[in-house]
Image (cartoon, one colour):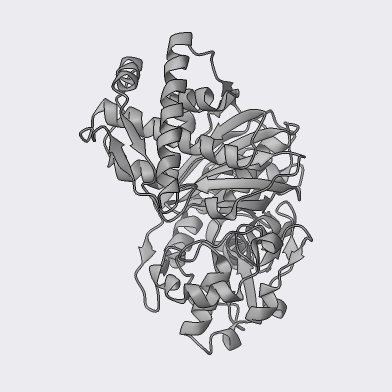
Length: 464
């Protein structure tokens, strides 16, 4: 496995599906292709287009093999998804979209069934963000479904199964606010028996384990040799964390940005979490407990920016600070540290496409990240990955509000680098740029703005 250099990384995000080819020595993405992760309406419920994804992946793997050669395959996906396989090894039911609102119709009944936060480190979340709620809802909708299920796997391992024919559950995905895992004891939670699925869950494995090699049919379709190793796979924010866990000692923080902004604190100190603020206890690829808080920052960015290009300059930032234009939480109010709060602009909403709107949005996202890091007692250097790592105004505000050093990672997707590094870490460090020292006047203005935003946001939270 140490000889594997060109790693094909399947990266299934909530918004897009990606295939990246990573050079494990230089830690560069030498080829990337994407497609939208469009949710199909049904029947029987909204679900992911896994057949379309599979065709796209096979076609792209073949192109990568012809162009570059592939030495190994790693997989990373979003969390909050679970896969039910029947006795033929096929889908027993379509893979439910965790944002399906009908799941909330059984919220009260599920609440009575689920374990307490103290057992799972998993807060009660809306819709299907708790995998246990998805399973409970599906089994209620289709009373005979459970009898048709032979094996249950987490989402990265579904793709590993498609490639290798081997089933498993990875520790990071099953511990990601599923309600199915007790991270403190390192075992399944009491919910597994209540749902009647203990004997159906695939074996729990670490993400870097080789789950198998390519099936003959996949080899024929892609041109990749059958002997090519396929790793177990990993939850995406834990893939982002993994690369830095190899080269940083605690304490440090990783902010993984995408559809979700996942704020992780790597610390050896005990951390008390608030289940009402969308905090949770993750488990890393190394088996560490990782206090985590998150919000849907990428989705919020899209809703506010509405596709307009980024045009703001430092002069625009200074003018926005002088006007004190603020966006207060929360745009996506069903989750995050300000769940239940309604977003509003103060003193008024800037027009679409303006620099003022872009700056206020960037500051909002940074202050939401800072609030999340406060909730998980984040300390040490903050490492920012994903699209927000290229937003200087986000980085400036996060630096000012947190009073910590910021490092921005330059790769297109930190998840693919982390997933590739599961094959070994002989390469160089992940390319990153430490934050520059901010001008004193600018820094003071940012801190004054941050303090007022925090006071206004907290007042709104206290009144819901």
